[in-house]
Image: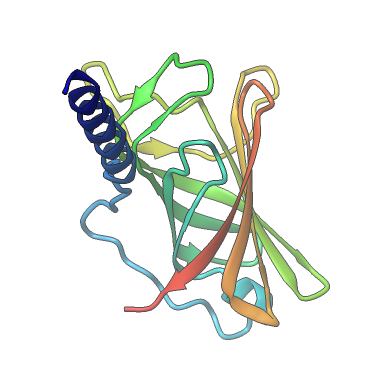
Length: 181
């Protein structure tokens, strides 16, 4: 009888752990997202960046990611980056879902592909008197930064492939799909 009770408790714990792992908090966007149609004179691959994209990073925690390219031109883009709950590899942060607005993500394009690239300080919960979700997105080689890169091929305009490199050089990748509303 004792062994069967132990097995029942063990099964409940395993099932509960599996359920908890799948119920992590998802990424959500802030209110007021405004996607501006790209200028018709832009190359097709650059126009393909515009819109909302969703996927999951290939980390052990497989956290959600949403990229929303609100406005794009031939050199830069305004991007909203939202993410779901995750824990850093070193366990230094168990971070809740949040988002940041990248004001000037770099845009580069050639050979039918367009790449969106931006850097951020390490994401941590916002603190202080006037916390801000706004980030420039530009590089400062003197500071530890996160580097994000997302590419769309004009021949596959509904798929965005991304890479992430943390301040500690921990690489991740993602395959995102366009969100059609």
